[in-house]
Length: 200
Image (cartoon, rainbow, N blue to C red; front, side, top):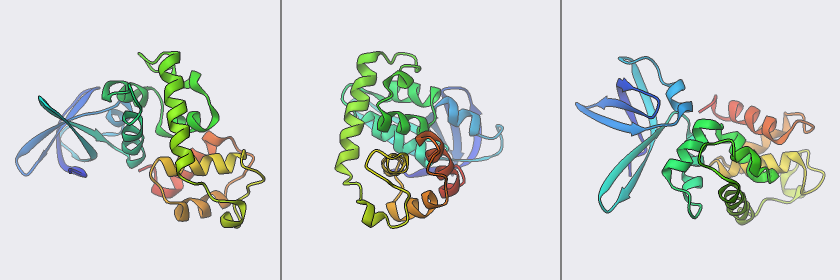
């Protein structure tokens, strides 16, 4: 419904910001990561948005990066994980750290976020891994030059995580081709995100 909002930042605090556009102030709930990315009050700002519609409320969430927005939507699709938990995760971990945790079964990393216990973290990992399977990751032949030795390689895991974050395979593969396949999954994801969208 609402893809993004761009205008003058008129208020900012750790959990929400207000952007004025066409005379209307839009309150967007944000993560700590987005709060740190926003400019000073009074300057121009842009947030990618997600509107949550409930029976008794309309709540707008804003993100400085598309990868963070995609991760938020992915997290809130997990049963039992609402916007509050998703924002807690994104306030504690970067989107690439969450994606890397999903593809490496690292539920303990997710537990670093306040309010996320072992049960919730394991459910997130399980459901996100199912979503990765549904992406039908390509075979080695289809990846051409991608340095993949087998289905457990870090490059292939990074590819899956980046697809979950909303990037296309055609954009990801050339970037991964230029990276050292011996890097960790998280490093591959972080460097790929920087190259793919300049951190967006």
